[in-house]
Image 1 (cartoon, helix red, strand yellow):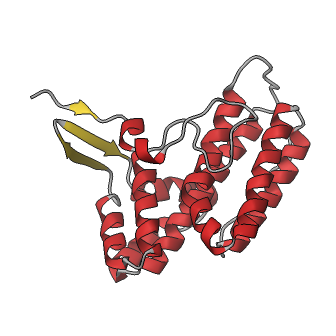
Image 2 (cartoon, rainbow, N blue to C red):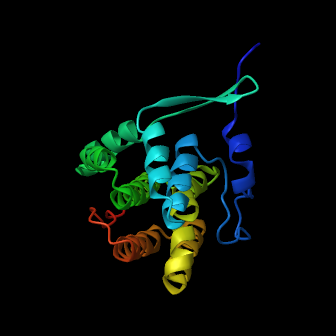
Length: 222
């Protein structure tokens, strides 16, 4: 039987809510695709929240290395693993996430894995927003590229961090979500300095509420 790849949007269909690039996109919506790794990361976080720590550790173990999962019916789900992702983040931000995750898996430490996954989500978001800042120097006027990058970054918050925060600290969840809205509005208004200022506030807020020991602080506008 011919083996077909399972599209990411099909895998995550029950979890996704697609929308247009507009001001009408509501909080908690996911714009665009969610990667296979993000799906597994969210499953692990949900398992930990529900007290199923051993299952969460197993979930992380299955996607620590790059993976190709047989989904049945001739379909596979391929993805870049947490190890590769953490290594790339370490090179970019000077962190030691690969070693941290490896140790947490070895110890079956669900709490450590939760922190590691949340940190990866945060830094992947930050990576996208920093890449977006690189477009400010060119001031593109007839392209959706900046908004596309923005939503790729925001998805990491909305999909992986916001659900937990909505349960543990809804006041902060609302505040951070509003900061993301303000970043979008400043992007649309072509006000990069204001965008960067709100990004810095967002980074500080997320780092504080999740108690993440990571490098924060946006860069100067080019």
